[in-house]
Every structure is written in structure tokens, then in C-alpha cells.
Amino acid sequence: MLQIYCILLFLPVLPALPVLPNPDPAPIQPFHPSSPPSTIPAFPEQSDLSGCPLDLPDDLFPALDHACGRSKNRHLVKARCCPALATWLYSAYSATALGRAGRLPATSYDMPVLPDDSETCVENLEKALRGRGIELLRPNDTCDAVYCYCGIRLHVPTCTDAFVVTGEGRLVGDSRVRALERECGARSGLGGCTRCLRSLHQLNNNASGATNGSESDRKKKMHDRDCELMGLTWLLAKNRTAYAPTVSAVLRTIMLGGNGGSQEPRSCSVGRDGLPLAVDSAELDYPSSSTTVGFPIYLYLILVSLYCICISLLSHL
Image 1 (tube, helix red, strand yellow):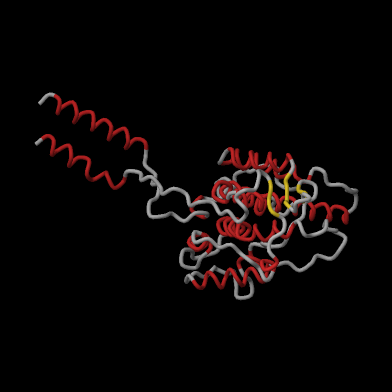
Image 2 (cartoon, helix red, strand yellow):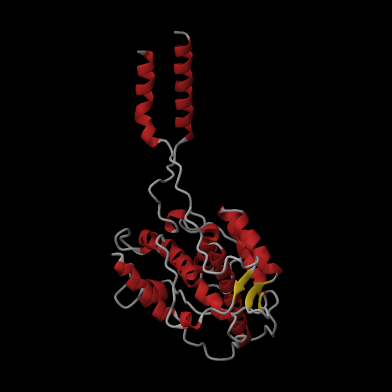
């Protein structure tokens, strides 16, 4: 009878025990697997240059539905939707952006800003989402979530300070890019976000030109933004699964942490909602068939104590 009692004692709590999650999906490999470290092919096939080629993996759809979809959210929340949306879109566009980057001459910020791929990409994304029965929330009928609400622009960035094209036509990052890979993949949480953000700022440290005057400031900001975008795109192209949580935290800090000021945020901090300026993992990877469930430590202690009591009683029978 005592054995049956012990079994019945533990049955009600078994469903609450944490379940190991399924392994992360294999990282997207849009580039040749034989590429050496910190090297990206710079010349894609000509057929890939039409329209807005996006690499849309299956796990993108439930993730965006979770963060920005009408079926999962009653209202748009910028801190929740925009960083996740930006991370997934930059990842989906990374092969195109980095592939074209090596073909472009160094950007002159004196010239008018050229049209980008944003409008075409938004249309392609929304069409793909509708095919899965997913609709992104919009603040109003005339403002879409990607371009208007979140301010996400998809264009080919250039950052000749940190990236060069080799004679073999491969895009190569310098020592700062390798440091970025280490810092953004080494730690998670607030500390990892800050280290990644500071390493990202190092990509544009070699920017040349005068810094006096509003026009020079504008050019430097455009240059710095391009280098930062190229750095984050590079990380997502290397390994989305490994880098996406930290990249999204950095993007949330950049998108929300600046508060419209003239200075770029230098560290990741706690937002007005009391949460760190980072994106919850659920906004990046939709839970698969198994999920990790929080379980209070005191319940563990109670269960262990009961188990020990049962073992002790059984041993005296």
C-alpha cells in the first residue's frame, strides 16, 4: 500500500514538471559552407538580384504572428513587435544585402538617398504571411507595421571601414568584425546585450571626415547606421539561431533606447516597463511541441523531501 501511496502522491505534479525543449532548428546557411571564418561571398547569381529575395524559414511565420499578428495581439506594442520584426526581416534579407554589398561602390552620403527594397519586401512578406493565414496588426489603415510603424528599412548597407571585398570576390570582415562575433555570441541577458552594442559601435570608429556642422553630423549618422546595420546583418547571416536573441536585444535598445535624442545608446538598460531592453525569446522562436515551463524552486524542495520520506519508509518495510 505504501508504494501505491507514493506513486499517487507524485502523479498530480508530473504535468507541471519542466519539459526539455526541442533542439533549436538548424541555423540558416545562405552562404557556401566552405567559407572561411568572417568571410561572405560578395557576388550572388544575377537571377537573385530581381525584386526582393527573402529567405523566409518556416519558424518565421509563427514567431511574427506571436509578436505582431492580429490573432495573438489585441494592440500593437512597439517594444514587443518591432525588434522581433526587424530581426527576422534583416535575417531574411541578409543573403541579398551582403551579396550585393560587394558589388556597390563606396556610398557617398552627399548624394540623394536611393530607393531601397523596403516597399517590395513588405509586399512580399505580407503576401507570404497571408498565405499562412497571418495578418500583421497595423496602427491604422494607411500605416503598415514594417515600414511606417517600426521604421524598418531594407537596403544594401556599405561599411568600408570594417568590410572589404577580396580579389576572389568575397566579403571579409576585419578584426573588429571578429570581435563583434565573439562579443555578441558569448553572453546573453543585459550584460551580453551591452557588450554586443559596444562592439557594434567599434565598427565605425575609423569614420573619416569633419564632424563640425549639421551636414557633417548627418553624414556621419548615416555612415554609422550603415555600419551597425551591416554588422547585425552579418551576424544573422552567420548563424541566426545563435545570434538572434542578442541582435534583437540590441535592436530594441537602438529602436527604443535613444528616445529620439542625438546620442546613440551606449548600453542596454531597463525600459519604462521595468523589463530589460531585450526581446523575449518567444518573440523570436515560437515554442515547438515541447516548451520550457517555469517551476518554483520551493516545489522542487517539497518534492525532494517527499521522495526521501517515501524511500526511507519503503526501506524499513
